[in-house]
Length: 145
Image (cartoon, rainbow, N blue to C red; front, side, top):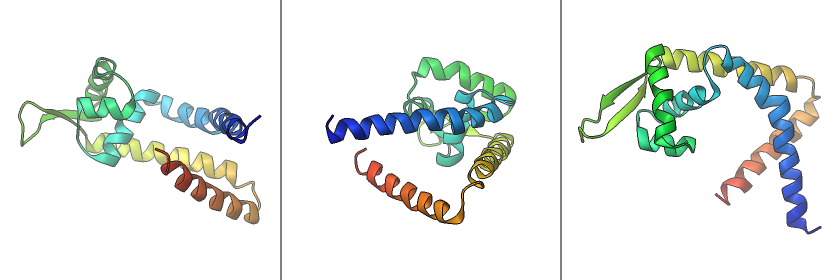
């Protein structure tokens, strides 16, 4: 097995472990109010501001056709609105509402609390080590994207 194959295997194992033990519990928190895809959409809008449908679809790695019904549901729930771009009326922007931002903020806090509960079991020295490793991983992975 090459070094690259070993790294890929370890990476895949870690992703699977994280999905089962961290992301699934987080998805269960969001599922009480909205779907995972809806949470993903309002997350982008909360962080990036208003986006055209095409750009939001690209960021979410889904087609515009898949995004359309998702956005309609978010509009019906009062979490996003559609509005015309002031510079180009042909462009329709999707913008998170105050209620949507409040929902996103609450869910994000609940998810963070769940992560904190899990990680609070680690001793201080392992938390320091994990923090250092996570920062290094971010730097390394940002260098290849």
